[in-house]
Length: 210
Image (tube, rainbow, N blue to C red):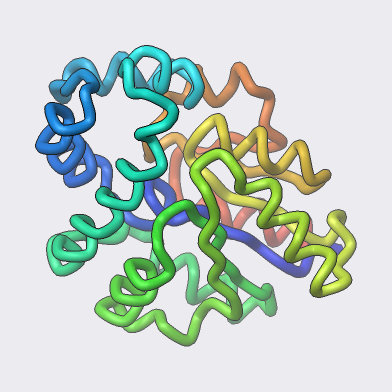
């Protein structure tokens, strides 16, 4: 019986894609990688995270500093960030159904908490962990071990191919959502357990699995 639902943040709960694109383009000259238009971003959504990294041309050595700067600049944009339509209602319904909700993200914990507070959701999640962009599986494994939780009781919800990869590496089920960064076809190619197009479908899946 599933008890815990772990959510990704950017592109799954929070619609940060356009803002992150704007910040990235501002930093592109400083860090020596290609800027991108919205049209190019749509094309990139068909690629995996590692393919996008290679395409951008950014040095792997500069990448950690870029991510830190992105998080810092994103903090100033928190008042301008919206949750995806229907997400708040779904989260509240899932808690009523008895599920424990958590967040594991490559964004900063401070950014997540700030947006949750603005939306009156600060008490909805029992844990929030921040990890490296390509190290989510390590954070999940550490959490599972710390809380002594069977992976079979956990499901992860994310919008990128790297979320699917992280879930598979830790032995938990994955619900991929098509309203975030990666396209539906890119997500489907990674064979998630579920692939959904509307937040309300989370209720339907969890009602059946729970």
